[in-house]
Image 1 (cartoon, each protein chain N blue to C red):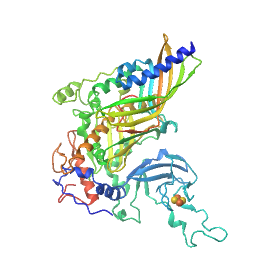
Image 2: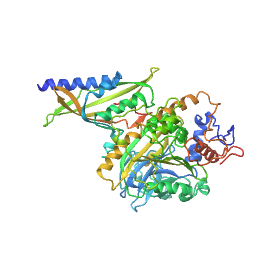
Image 3: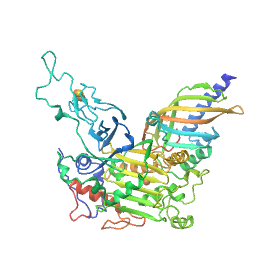
Image 4: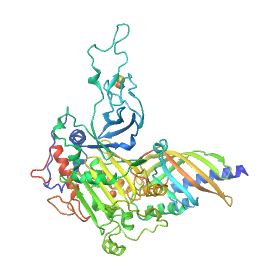
Length: 156
Length: 427
Ligand code: FES
Ligand SMILES: [Fe+2]
């Protein structure tokens, strides 16, 4: 039972990265619960106990709005994303949720095929199971790369 | 060290800026000397970041690393972060609290005020070695800047009594002028607290950002998010204000002074931007809680050369331009709130942080606009920009947004400091 859930969480994380990399951002939003909390913060702020965010979506609607705005309105550097995510550390919590931590590297590639390392950092997530399907209730992306190259338009 | 600069301005009102000025090594080196180390006041940090004696933060003026430090006397000092011995970086952390600063190389030790207070083996050992007897530590402190605070905003200048620019340096009071003083004071009527920092590394010349901050024309075209939600659009009341010398500037807007229908009509013929395209599911975070008596929902006073103070609705920040070579600069943004804010207000401000910074619905777009301008202008160095929106000739305040006048104001003061003013150039 426990191992099945752990495997489901590992698969969830793989899906998370691949959906972003394949530009299936609307499907990526579906990995979250309706009351989710998604933040991107930087390590520089975290280490000073400063609450500042780069992105804060309080609830799945705000998360979906980020994608809508990206798709239809915002101007940004045209690029493809490529995530590499480490095997996660998974720990069961008393309330039945799961604490998940992993490291990521995110490369960006221009439409002419030039790649650069865009961001590295950590995922700190809380995952819950709805009808046996794992969903992200909380995701804090802690970016070591606090000096954002150019701009940050697509989720990490 | 640098050859005299010679600029052939196509026009004396700075409505044409040669592209090579954004891409030239000599121009850049001269800017570091004549602008950032010249007779100007640079933004350093906020007083609220250094509450206690011994607190320090590293900051940048041009490409010079500077330590801002609250001395044991309670006064804020600023000094160049370069060891007086052999030039090593003394402070390597971004911030902290220390009773002294020790250079790791040979352990020369400096006080919170930047004075040299310790040189290991200065007197030698067993009568051997050591510094010459007449070595005077007082002559070898870290290079000090002049520091002044205005409403808790710390400014520094390299134009100290020993330097050539000193004679030309105005008091901070005069430098900011009536305009700058009024606008800065507006933001600091209550004690603030620091929410945190943003850094964005943009691959473009720093002057492209100085222009961007003086460019109210782009705001309601590039930033469709502004237009959609009436945060800043051409149909609203607002405009630009400048100091008398036209070096500082403020773009501003008043929310709710136009209607969605008015905006629709005005934007109907503008390609690429649509008033109603974006339909957000959750617009709660966009609500504007009025908190300034002047009613502005957008106020962005920009102080030459490196400082911006910006309110977009209820998000509050300072931004510092940190040049990183001629082809890049960092935007260092400090988000703040008021110390007496309710927890709800703090949360509201944090949610509005979604508008600003490197990932801001609005602000992110400037990063791309600047990079594409930098990239392509580099390929046609002898060509130039065309800056005529709002008219040619004299540079004036406007009560509308369709102007690029403040950009010409920037160049006119840039040219004055660089000693390359156009013959009969406007000021
Ligand atoms: S370089 Fe700093 S002590 Fe020698
Ligand atoms: Fe902008």
